[in-house]
Image 1 (cartoon, rainbow, N blue to C red):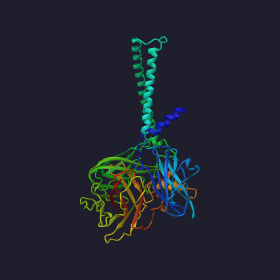
Image 2: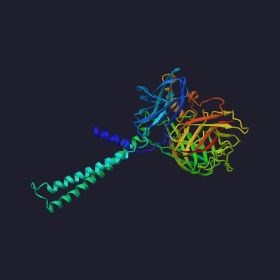
Image 3: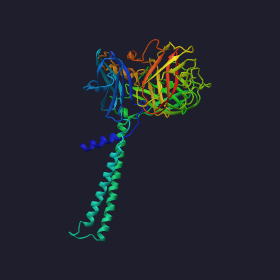
Length: 532
């Protein structure tokens, strides 16, 4: 029994598979108030579950003396019995920076409760963390070479022992083997080698089969997304079944809940140029699918990303591809938005005229990022307003928390003062790698869905609010009352700037779509970034 458990554990470590919730961007970035302290949290999730998450927390409020963290599920029985907390270690050079590690023992919709204690008292926040096995942990080359050498030695030993037994097993003491005995020994050794090779081949086949079966149960895979066009300039989207989700009904679940008032956020990006961008919100139909009345769409091949959130708080980003002919469609309305820009390229951060005269909609005339005389990056919007990326000089590093700050500047050169909440937030940003291996939908308070934050907040002992019944979350108009108190949330006029915490998961060329709302219109700035 013990041997079998060890074998299954080894299999779990070696199985491969991609993680598609926030495609290619599994780490969590979040900012929030733990009582009197404003904390910025970075969580690097493990590749394999069970695994160790690396946590870094910085307090922008002085006076924090100690930070403790506790992992537990957001929903289900596991949310009721938190384990003893772990204490993070403060940095010697920065007393307001803390780091540590935390075990995540199973896949599911987790939260990390963060309790800060200091001069101003104590406070707690809950940070949602979707945990799932997503890739292999490669064997060390030295260990692989050692095991291969031991296997060759073992095979050689077995063959040699059997050959020696046949050659000398029946000889009298001191008698030498003759040609007949040597010839027979060679036949035995050849047969033994074939048998051992067959056993090894059978073992390898069993290993691959067992690994595939275990992979189907352990490695996260997003459900398939089936996309088709129907008459009347409509798009039909069906979500496929996922055994990975249905095997975890308590910690992942399958029903959906709204995030920012919508059950699905749909993103269309024309490839390979990445020059057309659409952010749409399909409506569920009676058959369990989603249907969208398309706006004017430029013809081309499109990569489709669909963000959904489960009632457990677990997010999925589904993906598909589709060819779309030019459509006239309905005018843009509500929260739907679009942007256009020149094709993505490594030299796109230069002053070039990038207007698109073929835009079907007045708002569909964005340009890529350019530089003004001072070197600031900006994206021109249709009404002459500019969105400026206030980026510090120097290269953009991968695998590091960065702050992305954007502001709007009017034609008079002054900051725009009439920004409005867009789906309850100060802004939305989408980070997309040029090869489409990374897609992340980020908000001012971080990379986790706001619906998951609401659920996690509802589990805090200090929060007297009762979570809404999942059965009640069935329409795109359902509101999330807890969102008004989150960073980046507002009901009235906003400051003329918005910022996002995010870290690029790997080097490469990225396109960033930054969305804000003013004068009743959703506008999208488009910027390119080369990450080292």
